[in-house]
Length: 638
Image (cartoon, rainbow, N blue to C red; front, side, top):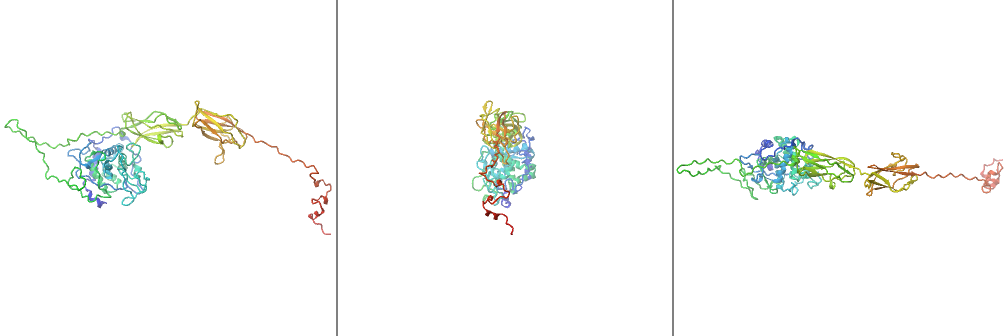
C-alpha cells in the first residue's frame, strides 16, 4: 500500500511535531471561534463513559477501530485556506473559501459538540474538533457531503466492504447483522466507520434520542473522540497524537492523510449546507485511474470543474505592488500637493462578519439534576398516580431547558413505562423539568430505585424511590354456610370466599390460606386437611390464591386427612381482611367382628368323635368298607 499511495502523500509538508504543537495551541486558545470552557464547574465531572474510556480492549483478531477498512486518500490543496493576518483559530461563520475547506453544517456541529463534551469530562486529552473532522473526511467524506437528516442520522447507511480477509482484515460477524446488515462478516459502519465490535464498547448516545447509532454523526463523533482519548492520551503530545490516529487505522499512510486534513482544517474552515459538501474520489482500495500527481504550485481556490484534469494555477512572475492613490487637485492654483502614501492591504478580511459566540449546549450547561418530591406508590397492576420527574439546573441553580434526561428502571422490578419500555429519554421544559411517562406497576411488590441521568454525563444523576404495594382487602367472607365435612381421604365441597375493600369488591388481591388445628392456632396443622400433595408426596397445607375480577376466589382441591377431628381453614389478605372456616374430618364407621356358630347337630354333621369305641371299627372308616385296611401299616408276617 505504501508503494501504491506514497506518491500521493506529501512527506514533510506537515510534520507530526508541528501538528502536535498546533493541538496544544488550539487547546489553550480562547480566541474568537474557539469554544470557551464551561463555566458551570463541569470540569469536576467524571470522564464521559467512565469505565469504558480506557485503553481499547484488544479484540480476538487484533483489529483497530475501523478494522483497517479502506479510506479516502484525497489530500487537501497545497494552499491552505489561511487569510493573511487572520488568527489561525477558526472564525465562524466563514462563508467563503476553497470548496475543500467546507464542512456540512450538521457534521461540523457534531464535531464541535463532541470536542466540548470531551473537554468538559477529560480536559487533559486536549481533543480538537479539527482532528475529528480530519478523520471524518478520510473515513466517509464528512458523511458523504453531509447527507444527514435533522437529527444527524445519515440518509442511507454508510458501510465499508465486508472484512472477509480478501484484501482486508478477516473479521467474522459479531453483531448478527444488527448494524452492518451482514451476518457473515463485519463491516465498518457510519460517518466515522466503526466496526460493530468496537461500537459495542465505545458507542455513545450524544443526541439524547435513547439510541447509540453508529450512523448518527453526533453519536459517532463523540464515540470517536472518546476512543482517541483512551488510555490517558494527551493529543497535544506528538507520540500520543500518532498513537491515537493509528489506533483508528494501523497505516502510516492513513496517519499522514489524517494529519494533512487536520492541519488544513485548523487553518480555517467554513460551513456549507448539508448534502452539498465536496466528495472525495480516491480510495485506498480502488484509486482513481489516471489521476495525475497534484501540482506543485498552489491550486486555484475555486471548485474544480467536473471531469478532465485540473489545470495548475500559474503564479505571477512578480508580486503585485499596491497602487498608490491619485494626487488630489490642488486647492490653490500653482501650489502642488503631496500625494498620500499608498495604503497597506487590510490585515483582516473586511467582508468577514464578526464571530458569533459559541453557545454551550444545554447538556453541558446543566450541573445538577434535582429529583422531584412526588411520592411514587402504586398497587400491583395499577398505574402510578404521580409522575416521576427531575429538574435540570446550572451551577447557579437556574433551570436549564432542552436537556435530554434518561429515566431507567432497574432489572429487579417488573414495573414498566408505556409499551413495556424500561428506559425512556425526555427533554426538560422551560422550567428545566423533565417528566417521565406514566409508570405501571407489575406484580412484584417492594421498593425500587428509578435512576435519571443526562446521556454522556454519567456523573449527573438523580434517584427516585418508588414502591409497589400488594392489593388490599379489609374484609373476607365465605359465600354460603353449608357444613364442610369429609371422610378421611375424601374431598370437600368447593369453598368460595369474597374480598372487599371499603365495602367494594376487591379484585386481584392475594389471599393466603392455611389449614390450622384450631380457631386460636396460627401455625400450619400437621394432620389436618390439605390442598393435595407436592412433587415429593408431602401434603400442602398453605396456599396463596388471588381474587378474580369479581373479587372472589374458589378452593376446590381440599382433601380430608387421615386423622378425624375439627380443623380450621384460615384465610388472610393485605389490609387486615381475614376469615376462619371450620373443616371436619369424620371418623370411619366401625363394624363388630362376627363369631363362628357351634356345630352340635349330629344329623347334619356326624363326627367319628361320638364313637365310644377307643379303636373304632371298619364301619367307622372313611371309606365305609374293610378294603380301606391296606391304607394302614402292613401286618408283620406270621
